[in-house]
Amino acid sequence: MLLLLGFISVICSMFFYCQALRSGLGLKRWACAGLVFGPFIWPMFCMKKRMKVNKLFGFNALILRA
Image (cartoon, rainbow, N blue to C red; front, side, top):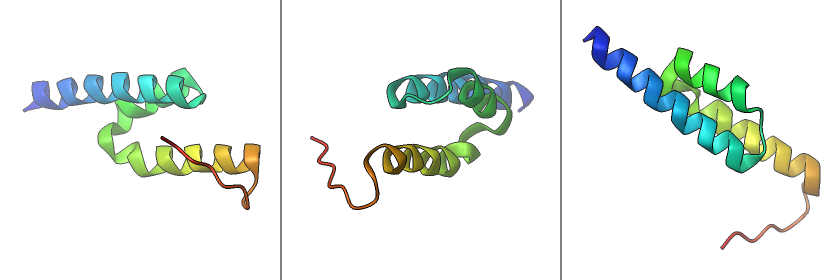
């Protein structure tokens, strides 16, 4: 059971590292958060990414993602 939790933490750490790289957020910060908190950090990551987009483009901007 402990091995499974360690494996999930490492996978989440790699996942959040790649997502932070793609989103332009702090790499080490999100990798460490994924290692410590696992998948429970996902809502916070989405909120931070949305805040960054709103800061760059404003709240009234229309952003089309293909």
